[in-house]
Length: 72
Image 1: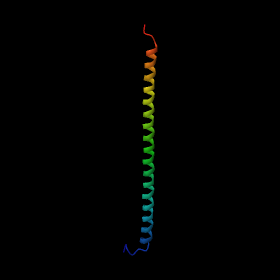
Image 2: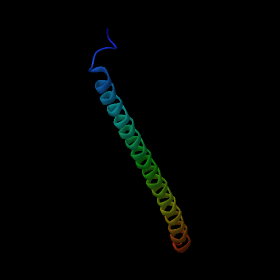
Image 3: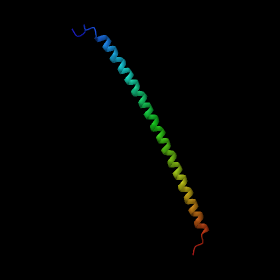
Image 4: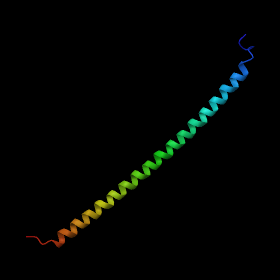
């Protein structure tokens, strides 16, 4: 009785298309999310590198300043 219904095949085809489109959309969103996380991590690493360079430069300047300033 249920299989003799004339709406089953068109409805099944429509549901299948909706599922395929949904899966592809989710996959694309996941890829974009991964790219965004990768970009964020690269920025974070660059920021850490720049901060370490600034710390080294500050230490060098402090050492140079201490060397120049006469001790009383």
